[in-house]
Image (cartoon, rainbow, N blue to C red; front, side):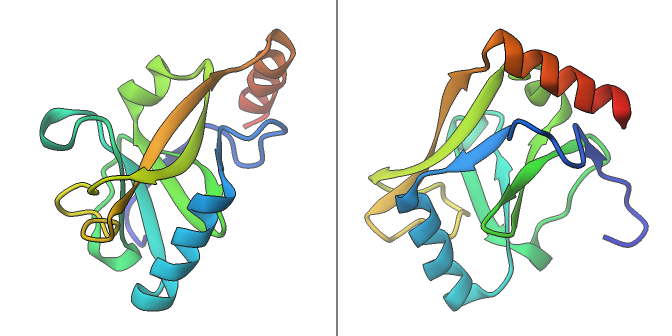
Amino acid sequence: MPGRRVLSLSDQPSTERVIATSAAQSLIAELRREYGPLLFHQSGGCCDGSSPMCYPANEFRLGEGDLLLGQICGTPFYIGRSQGEAWSHTQLILDVVPGRGGMFSLDNGREVRFLTRGRVFTAEERIALRADQDRN
């Protein structure tokens, strides 16, 4: 995004901070065919709980405090700085489950929705992630 600086926890982490199940990858491909380039932002609460929200890439404004966790199928996945720091010990796993998506998320109205699961990084993975951060 021109003129906006988006922070990144790591440009090329050896351990991925965010990954996706095959079901999530399939839904991303479907949404990309319909809407073009996409963007994910992990909601921090309020109206849609802490759901991953999927938007057309050109219709979501990133803030200076948004962190790029990684890419899923070529789609950037962002999270707010404080939430990203609180979850820094956890790998986020984007999945799909039955239900309704967030009100403004592109998965809404499809009878399935994106869901973020978590897996605590091992001690070795945390060391590797810290080393990646130190290099950046």
